[in-house]
Image (tube, rainbow, N blue to C red; front, side, top):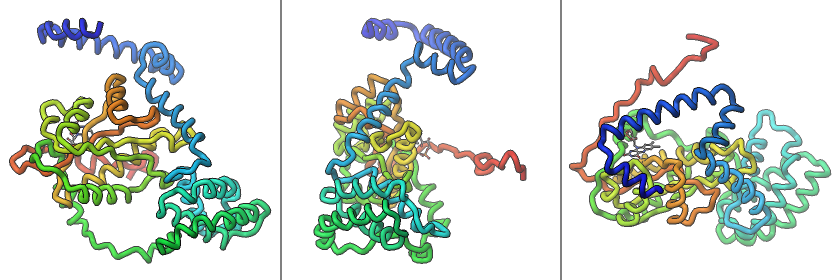
Length: 365
Ligand SMILES: Cc1cc2nc3c(=O)[nH]c(=O)nc-3n(C[C@H](O)[C@H](O)[C@H](O)COP(=O)(O)O)c2cc1C
């Protein structure tokens, strides 16, 4: 059926194709008008007439399930621990700090710490151990907190065996005044941002892994909701694989064969027990990707973000090629390499700041 449709489309003159496209578009707008009357009608529309959100809904549910299944299991990073240690840090720096805080989640935090302290990577373990130590040093006593404290110090030995080998400094909250002095001027930052452009034409030259790792480390410093960092980057490190995967997307026509290396930015919905956070993978991954692209520029490399469309057959191809789980969603692709000095760059006029910054509608300036 699909092959027949394709054949038909290929023999139709462009004029007819455009007319059909226009008629279809009119029909879709009319349908939208009908069902955009209320949230309930919209739900009906997407249940009856469109599968556009199907994969996302499936991914969110699978993610919620995976979140629950991974709890209390030994692994190299714990989402729950990362989130709760972050919450403890916010409690520690609260002004004024409350005598008793985190009572509602300290038990689950210590239970998770106990489950993963032999397996999580050292920096995460060091952070969790130091913050929990600090918390129990300052928090007031309650029966629940005392119980958690006893369990923490009983489990702590397993962690300390691993930490002593590393001799890492304590990673606990500190004062703003302790931050290193700002050395990047606005002009320098402006110049970097002006220099970073979407580059689509590259030299056929591989990228040193160490440079990419540097850029990824810079990306990891980006803010993320509750410090969960629910994303990872899959690296296609040769032109053949890069072109194969870049062709799964729609926006690489004409230049996918020229991409030396490619990253697929993947968001992980198993970081969340609730649907309300389903957008955070896109936000966090995008913030990290921006830092990555700026860092690449400072390292002499160039990049181009590439849109990832939520289209079922393309999603299936990508998931199969990369071995993604149903709750791991491609967010975007990033082409990278050494720019061809003679390659063209689109001018891409930006909007003026005055049109991007809007006043508070309740308090006009
Ligand atoms: C999420 C996202 C998706 C994009 N998708 C594509 C794409 O599919 N193909 C492409 O050639 N450029 C793509 N771009 C690059 C944009 O066209 C480019 O960022 C924009 O025109 C501004 O130009 P600049 O990046 O040089 O400032 C994408 C950019 C973003 C942020």
